[in-house]
Length: 174
Image 1 (spheres, one colour):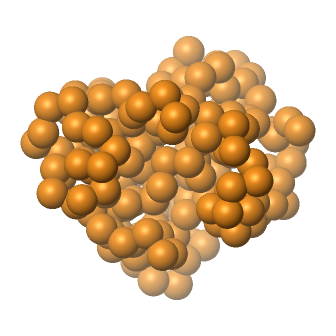
Image 2 (cartoon, rainbow, N blue to C red):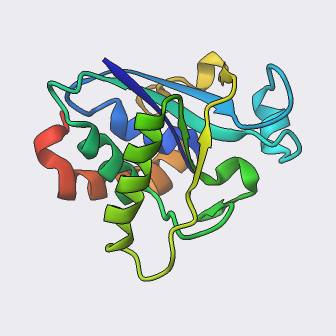
């Protein structure tokens, strides 16, 4: 099993897709990359903690290749916008990848190179060593499954799920 910690805007979006990905055994929404210990959602949303909203995606690489997890990441958000994903603006929504090993750092950099071919603007995804990871509050875990009728889910997440299905239907469950 491997775990990648990825930030691509609001963690609810990445969580919704990775929860449905074959071979993924866990997706934990959380915060990392900042200077405040044990921040809460409101502190992170204030933009003053330095943290990014991220997901820790644990998967079985014998079922789903690491390249699929990483390439999917670059389809699910716009890695060319600095500190912004759609209406979500601030450093907490930055495109980010947090590595624990040199091997992961290299995988992340290779994924960025592959993804650049899909984008006309330069990718600005931050690649950093993983500092402490702080699990987000329970309400944020598997948010889409709990609240599929919520406005954000309908307007923002559903189109991302549709896009993921378009490109990764072989890897996605119902």
